[in-house]
Image (cartoon, rainbow, N blue to C red; front, side, top):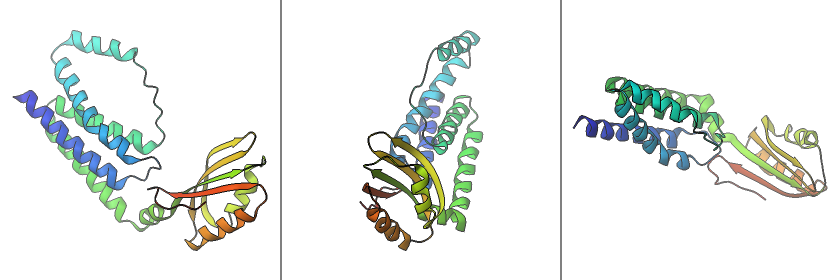
Length: 209
């Protein structure tokens, strides 16, 4: 019965954590992908801790097993790594019968996320962050595009650059205002060699090409 309660509690807490991640995520990747696996990860962690906590031999065996396991899926955003660690923490706490700590951890995360979401700086960043993908048929340097973006953006971060037969360059930007999106679109369309321009917000619902 204690094992069933631990599994159920682990699922509930991790499910609530996934809800927080969905609503508060500022990641450029799709938050649904990671949110779906958080409860499964937490339950798996809880099961492992319940099994090994009563046996030193099993604990040592677990260390040996984990030393030969390699996770090759890259973590693209630091935010994803943070929520993975939080999910593991919930599974560890519940599996070790530290349920109050697990509950307080989730409440702390929810409270801090709510406070951060309510700040004006956080709202402005969530509102204006865009991914800008530029494709040009002729090789160009990134400095040429950065000079153009600096006219319309107050924050520019290079995400990806490919310069072979054609140039593909991806930036994360914060526009000064929404009107600057059209201005940037018009200037790059007039630039020689530019094939396409994609401007995508973090929820992938705004675009221009």
